[in-house]
Structure formats: structure tokens, C-alpha cells
Image (cartoon, rainbow, N blue to C red; front, side):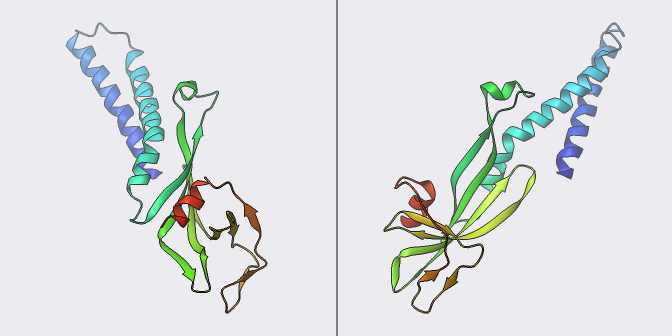
Length: 172
């Protein structure tokens, strides 16, 4: 976040500098308000660019085995350009590379799910996926594993068979 702030400030300074150079080259014929307007437009442009490139930059830095399951696009009334081109504000990724199974329950897989947000820290939660019955349980509170691999106190939720989390975990 701090680096983006510095980049935004430097973009404003660069655009103001370009406006100042154009003013000098035209014999100081440009209006005086052009330099602060150019600085503001440069900073707004840098901010918009950072919003739209955040998802791609973050997705490229994911380690091998972590696959993106879902994305959430954002539209805002105070950012009218997002009505035409929504940007990705949040996404969910599944660590398929470290998914685990128990020998007694091969149709159930335990995988880590990561929740990414534009201005929020990354959150991780283990999830138990039942591939045979198309259901999912987030193992946050109270779930306990028995020696035979079964789970008690899990809050199971049915998911459609084409759910991206179910597909990613069960197909690996």
C-alpha cells in the first residue's frame, strides 16, 4: 500500500513536470491551472491503474499449486468507469498442491482456502470437501477428527456439482 502511495505521488509529480515543460516550450502561453490539473489527473490515472492491475499482479505471485476458484468484480457509482469495466476486488484461491485425504475416506479431501481482498490481509481457512456428496465444511471452530478420519461437529453445506472449489479440490 505504501509503495502504491509513493508511485501515485510520483505520477502526479511527473505529469506536473510534463505540463511545466510544455508550458516552457510554448513560451509560457498555457494557462496556470494546467500544472495542478495535470498532477491530479496523473494521480487519478495511477490509482485507477493500480485498481485494475492488482488482481493480475497478485494472481501471478501465487505459488505453484494454488489455483483461483472465484473472483468478485466491483462496480461503484462514485467510479463511473467501473460500470463499463468492473475490476476484481476480491478472490478466493484453493491450495490444491497440499490437499490431503485419509485412507479410510478417500472421497473427502482437506484443503486450504485463501481469501484475498484489495485492501485487506490474506485470510486462510482449512476446508473439508466431500467429493461424493458435493458438500463443503469450513473447519474453523469445533470440528474434530477421529482416528478413522471421520469428522464430528463439522458444519456441512451442500454445493452445486459445478462449484469451482469442489471441482478444483476433487479433480486433483
